[in-house]
Image 1 (tube, one colour):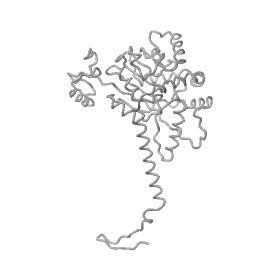
Image 2 (cartoon, one colour; image 1 turned 180 degrees about the vertical axis):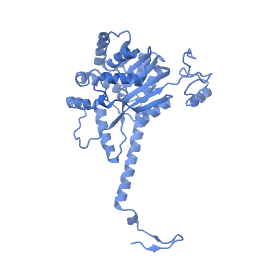
Image 3 (tube, one colour; image 1 turned 135 degrees about the vertical axis):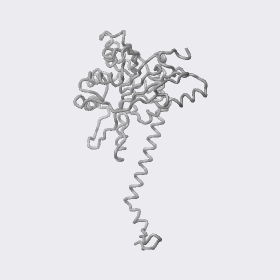
Length: 351
């Protein structure tokens, strides 16, 4: 055992290595360091994913997935394919009108529109003009039928294409709002997708994302379970569940002003409780939960809302002026006045 020795501060007990570092403490430290290292690797991986090179083959596979499972989606989800939803889907769509912030007469873009039922509802109830895009050939044809049947063909148009290339289908700087309703996560090139939205937004325009993001575990032992369930979701649904911090970093890095980031707000009595996803899994066999005792819900649902900056270069007029001082500094160095930075109502500095 340790021997007592004197110091200037009085007697102290000198302990052996094994008394100070018990086997339990050593194993705990090893486990902690390994988990931290694994988390850092995961964060690095997610950061690489959001900046990766675009691969059009994944977008094609998303379209093929929805083509193959269209009837099953319609049977379980009905007209609106969103997992986080209300029992009465009209309540969800009205909530999204409020969250997105439509104003009468706006031109908006539905990026990943499904069969365009939300777009039709927004056009009628939000008094907006909607351009919609889907990569699914089956959804595109059904959407055209729904638009015609609803009598809104002058307010809603649908395009077949890949939303990573919005500028190939729509005019640059033409839209007040670009929104993603659980479609953003289908992208494996989120950096390119955010840039595509930027290109078609007007100065002062809004990007709105409602999607699922990887949950941060409260217990270290849940991390592996969460990773396992996310891998199943990604593989089954042609998805790539996003890392929230990485997405926010790239939005801000592009120049977007973050207005809000919050959980989806639904009244408890309206909430569908995600049972619909379980029904779809049982019907299709996709991403089945094999052991509910060990299951950890792997994602959180968030709404992100950002603004593309708008201000007059010569007058420095913008409510986000302080946040944009850095961009103004870069502009002054390059002596370039980008189209994005103009005041509402003025014509583009580049014509």
